[in-house]
Length: 270
Image (cartoon, rainbow, N blue to C red; front, side, top):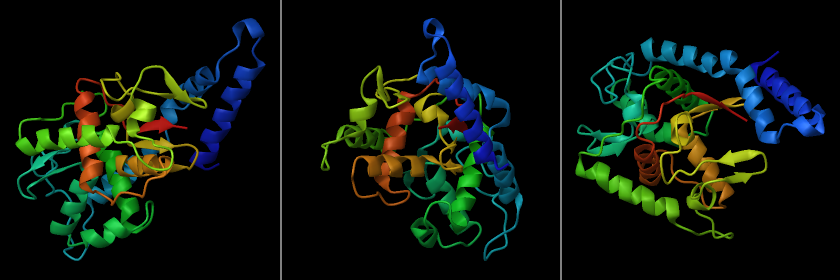
């Protein structure tokens, strides 16, 4: 059975169990979801993406036939552990603030010779976009259990935080939605999904500290760029450009707000 089918089966069993409980001990839908996540904790399908990502990092590829081991994610060339919890951050070589996905895009172009613009235009889950998502899974897993610690020393990092804050609260579209419409208050939920308040530190393994994540509903590994893309879809906004400044700024805002929270990425989502 495929990982996505196994996960869906466990999910269904958990919800059936919730519905079958006696009235006085009935589980909520949220309890059922939490239970199925716990049941899958030792077999998160994201582990398959992690293994693929580690192999891709160490494999010579691209026009330059090079590995990504010369890529600097912020802690020095080839250093992976601890890098994820400090991203997005400013990089002197590109003279911009970058998140993990945009930084990998730069490295794949400069180190391996790939066409970054072409990859950015590729649909999620296809071609080298699938490569980036596997790399994101492995790199984030190497910092699992560490605390989010995004830097705010460079002026561009501070500017991006303020830009991200404005973008987070910007309302528009046919339903006058903003990011804050769903994630700006405590105690909100949509259908069976609890919605963390991302204007402050939501806690360990919640919100920004849980992405990238394996989506059971689609059987895919989603990075933060895809997660934000889907949020724009739900707001009925035009999709943002891949690795565009607005997506990175939102990452800075949420990441800085999550400082001190323990990362569990790649997590497991419905």
